Image (cartoon, rainbow, N blue to C red; front, side, top):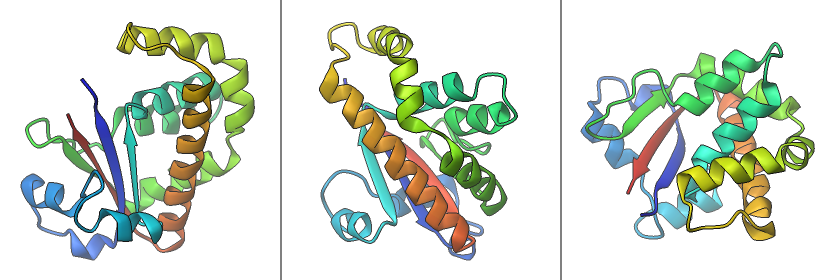
Length: 166
């Protein structure tokens, strides 16, 4: 089973008072609806079967360093996560901290150094799917895109909605 993770930049004022079902509707996934427009504008990132690997990479890289807490928070998902609707929001203050961490994170170096650990983690998620060069390259690309999305959201003082779809 494939899991799609969607992150969308959005002004915090646009989500005030919304319930999880309404938040979910603001974070489109896949290739339909407004997704292509939001993706092209840098307001939306959709990753299929890769978000858990990004989280693992960030936690391995940050390990016991000063940014380990931010890496754990980012990997764990938003603090207001709703298990029923599979959605939550990273507020602007956390987005700023995450953006600073991601901008300084040597993603390519970490992904190479921890490749065996990432392969083992990927195998624990889906034993039938190998962690090959293509998947490794996609991880790097998705982590860089996530860093860019959080960076742009931080610059604009925005929140980031995270949503899962199975």
